[in-house]
Length: 394
Image 1 (cartoon, rainbow, N blue to C red):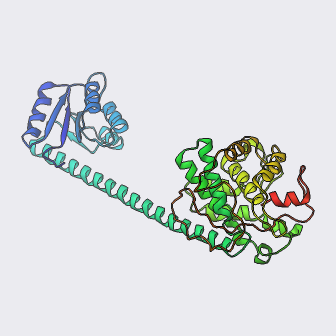
Image 2: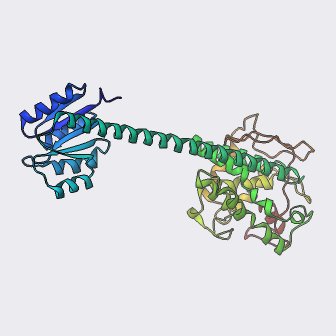
Image 3: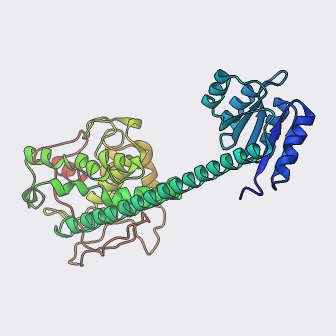
């Protein structure tokens, strides 16, 4: 919009003065509306989009300074030129401090009026253009930041898959946990966005194991207590890796707390009950199930029925009741042929391809199965033997 079409508002309690001022500006091609009091002017400002208002300083009831404050508060995009018949420096300074663009003494010569209006509108256009440019620049920066986060996140996901692919016992683990978690999210009626988030959390829940010593991850037997404490650091480390790039903080919390136990005996923070984030509880259940139904160095994979029995004993202590019960209900449903809810048997299948960077539900079926035994020898939970503890503790 240029100076010939911008809308102006003239506010003066003297109708004749108001009309003369309006006519001068109309001859210059402006669209001018008149008001004879501050309240009526404020109503017009709310109804129509004005670029500039010329406001008489002294009016009955509500004066020009009051109207200036209201315009500055409710219509900051409108520039205001104050008009007065009294030369008062203090009043002029006060008006400028309140946001007025300029201050003119009446009667205002025609050329001074038009030049002042043109200058005020030109400054307004420059300001609006600068604001649009800044907004566009901010959007470009935000878009670039999103792309960088997605690239980094894609690299992290690829790293997580590569990390598992190095180990025969963990290959495909995170993808299966993600698959189970997605199915559980759909069963619970979570939104599409939340389902995508839990899928991503499942894929990345063990990314912190990149900081675990390789000799510990690759140890063929059970871990010592010291080694197990070292492995437990992976939850917090995974959260640290994801925190700078995660747009949704729930992703970080899900990774951080997926080893918390319902009774508060888990790690890293010993959260209990509802204090454990829902996504973390979902990962806990699906992670345990995947562990039980995967092969171990010293025993074959448990059957779904055996896994069900072991997990049932841990409800209310290790496992969250509502989420575990929902998962059991999901297991009882007919599984889609393309995505069976059971871990595949041991094989030498190739590692999965690098995942897409967008958080969509996982569908990879890598046929290599087990994860490393991470529980220290002799460790137990209340309702399990030592071997069962090792099975259920990812």
